Image (cartoon, rainbow, N blue to C red; front, side, top):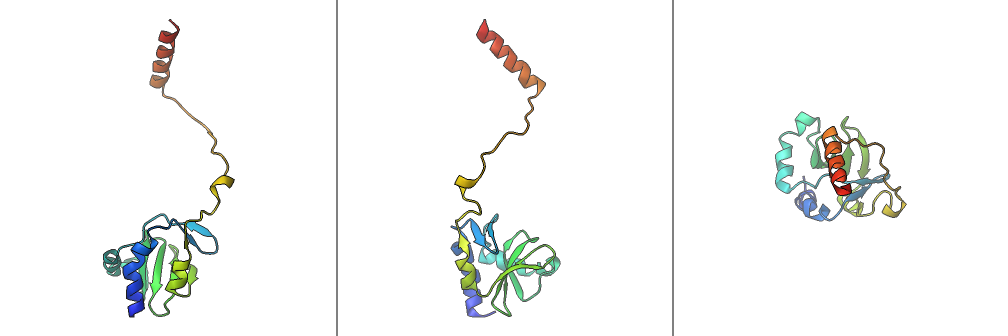
Length: 137
């Protein structure tokens, strides 16, 4: 691992903190914070348990889907649970440039939520009926 790799891993938690999305071949939500440098270091000891190569340094994810720095090539890899590369960035700078706060679907274009089904307990129904009866009396 070279000095550029170390600097990236030491700073990714802070660099990534303001962002909610990442551009791959689409825009995806980042559901977890980027790991601290200490968490990255701690993860090195268990990456073999998760079938991650020794030259890959995970820095984000839930260990099923992970973002890793490939220390052989300098690429950033997005690996799925089967450890297939879903997407890759040529450099750490290219990866940082893909961070965004742009949602996949702009909020104004999203459909309004609709209620599909609801259910009230018998106890709630009885209490509501009693309150309504008292108001009418």
